[in-house]
Image (cartoon, rainbow, N blue to C red):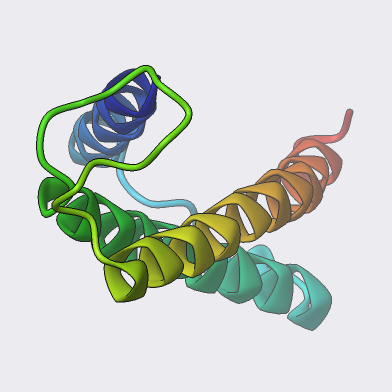
Length: 115
């Protein structure tokens, strides 16, 4: 499931780059101060999500072979498991904040478009 999540994030980032290259950036001069701060918070949450996810993924590589059992792999020491768990929680929390702030950014775009 994590590989699917990473793939979807990667697909979104590629599609965003394509969108900006084809359509250009939105004119931020029309944005209110609150809308700009919502966008900045959104981008900050994205960075936090990506960094925390990368830390969790790097720690997971130390765990050894993927196991379906209840116990951790013998190669996974307690420190790596703890860092992986904390990074995962940060990534999940950041992803929820990304969703919330994305709704705010989208609402601002709709309001500027007259919807």
